[in-house]
Amino acid sequence: MNEPTPEDRDALMSTVFEHMEAQTLGAAVRLGVADRLGDQERDAADVAAELGADPDATRRLLRALAGSGLTTEVRPGVFALTPRGALLRTDRPDSIAAFVAMFLDRTTVRAWSHLDDSVRTGRPAFDELFGTGFFGHLASHPELSRAFNAAMGQGTGATARILKNELGLAAAASVTDVGGGDGTLLAAILAAHPHLRGVLFETPQGAAEAGPVLAAAGVAGRCEVVTGDFFVSVPAGSDVYLLKGVVKDWDDERATTILANVRAAIPRAGRMLIIEVVMPETVDGSVPSVMYIGDLHMLANVSGRERTEAEYRSLCGRAGFSVAEVRRMPHPSPISVIEALPV
Image (cartoon, rainbow, N blue to C red; front, side, top):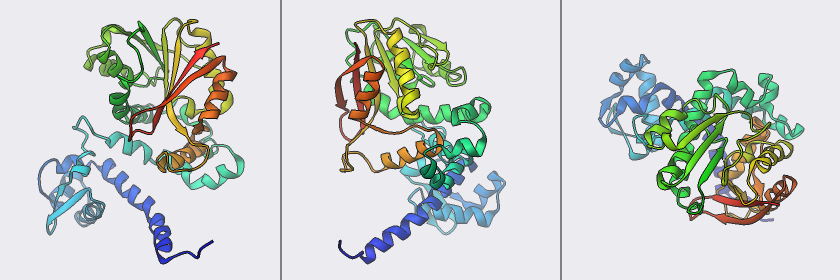
């Protein structure tokens, strides 16, 4: 093994500060800094007055954001958003403010400080810290649940634009999105395929914001919202069943239960499409490095995991499906579509 270089040392030192940079971003979103700046050049003192914040501390925050490329200091004490920083405005259709706020929420971040405990035990630190699982905690905290739904909707938006025409739905008549959140993905699919009818299946709290999303896409008349528990059953009869970002949230036993309930509902000629990142057998650079960090996020918070193709094939087999195809979406998306057929 070669000796570490000064660059290796600097890289590790920089990593130590990255969580502080993320917390800076979280503070800016919680304060609403981007909305206050808007599309203008604004004095830090004026921004602070509107925020009800300390002027000097606000200027220091804005300077830190400038150092991260989110604002620019156009002259001393006067700041404007950069194009990257504009993504934190809540009034933009491409906003990721809710996504940032959720993943940097104090509730979400707390378990990360106990990641070593999760590595020792193999169990989510979240459960020990809060006395319940992550999704159980959401169910009893409506405001946090709304924030989670908004974050998932924003996170799904870009994926929906890619997936809506990539799922081979021309011959299908109906599609059920299992655990479909606020309907962002299903709305995009139905809008792109006027012949389809849809079912959005979610928990009551998960589907709480689905109505406006479906209405805004002009597909509410072709989509039924059904609430329930996918550990018990899923609605029967659709030609295609989608599960995006669902299977990875659960351990093997519970993931198999969900898939088995889909198997009980799906017609003999139906198709199940699992939409997830498929990890390589070894770390080879074929998926973004953040996917491995996301895997640890699920370890600390929700008991889920990212999986390889072999692991997805095993889960599907246990639930009564055979994997027909695993197809990676066009670059640069890391998402794959795992098509499984009932056996």
